[in-house]
Image (cartoon, rainbow, N blue to C red; front, side, top):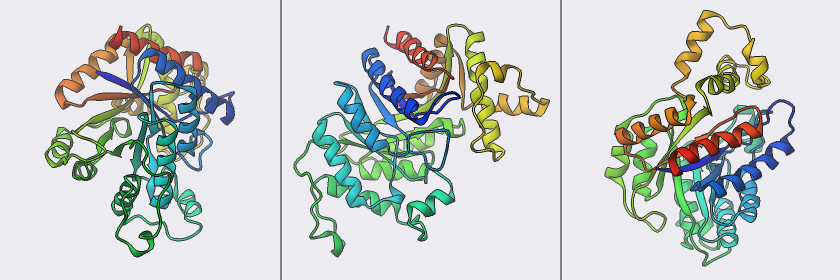
Length: 332
């Protein structure tokens, strides 16, 4: 099974946003050394918890600091942007790092309604034409001329570049069908709610039409995991993430993420404990073998091609350790 990295540039306690971005670059370098297939930067707005608000810029910097690993966005939230400018961004990235760029397209806002209106310059955010915008961006990247009159005289440069691979992100059957029809890779976010549905993947494959971006269907599934050398270490490191998600679901969006030491003694009601246990569907916790066995079983059931790993232990040392332990489990 191929393994990849999804990074949100988390700002853990005691660190700055600048620290988080520097650690994203360090993670990319280590992931490349370990044999990971790709690293994608997420897009988050109006949050103090993540520093990844401009994933294309971070991707460019990471591409310059690495040699082999594929680099991309998971994803570029296209509802906010002109498809013309998005195409120019990814054509430039692919010209700078030919054969290594992934154009990951997201349909979600990546932030709350305040961010949505700020990104739309105060206008009503556009949410009903996302697939049309994706089609236009893909045409421009491939040096085609979109049909709309205001696009016909505008060339998206640089031209004649090595095409990036293109992926549609989602967690619903609708996005799976659209990804197939457009000839894109399909990236499914298991960690959103811990749910998997084989019917989505079957629908993607059934509707897949080869394109210049993807010759055959490819599925990446993103998991949030916490791995330790022992089960006890994994549980210790996982608790801050468990509590952070619990507080987020209660509306405490920017509640400071606790350290493992603080989380250990955090007061939890019986209902809190039940909620956290249920949420373990979207935070896979255990040793590398336990998590590896889980992922292999998931792959056997659902037939995806690649697992993309997101993890947020408190320390960078522990975060790199998670990726090292999984690399050893899967790649020896």
